[in-house]
Length: 169
Image (cartoon, rainbow, N blue to C red; front, side, top):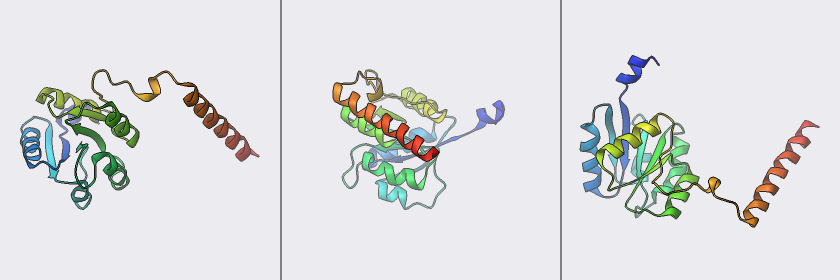
């Protein structure tokens, strides 16, 4: 894509949140920021999955919803829309939720009290292929390994080498 075309590209963003006020507020905000367009606002993962609309570039997905949590909803969403980039949207600055979101395939995690510029920058960064996590969150793979985790990693790598050699025969 040329630089001019890239500058004129509108990033489509859909919202999945069970709170109508949040959905409506994000719909308004996303449609009033140059370069962004709200492609839809849905009350649940099921409602989003039922759509026949063109998938958005980015999905802002609420972490905690009554029917299916955003974390649990990621697998079917990624199955139906493999190219979609998911940013979790939450009231909770909870490292467990962040870790589970990351493992499930989210590209970012933004708190609902984030400012409009912070949300915009998060969307842009994730759209460009980056990942955005709250300050202080340390992804699991960058943490020092405990002895059990070290052994599990070593066993997993040894199995991979063994299976690769077996396939070569």
